[in-house]
Length: 95
Image (cartoon, rainbow, N blue to C red):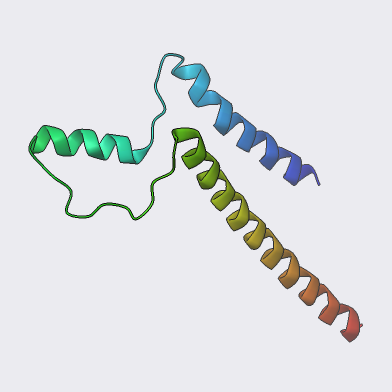
């Protein structure tokens, strides 16, 4: 229990410390940085492929990204809980 609290505090510190250290920093995504570098290297670059569907706004795109992350985290949490429960069940049967 004590170890979990320490790990939780460490995670919270890792989230907050970058905002405290770089107060005026812009936290953008990798796509924007990659696009900037590509246009610096080759200004007349044209992508050879375009997306089939693009979200109508940046907020919708962020929402879809957050939902994807939430489903992934939920799946991983469910799987870990399932494996732990299965292991605890087999140990209980052995006793």
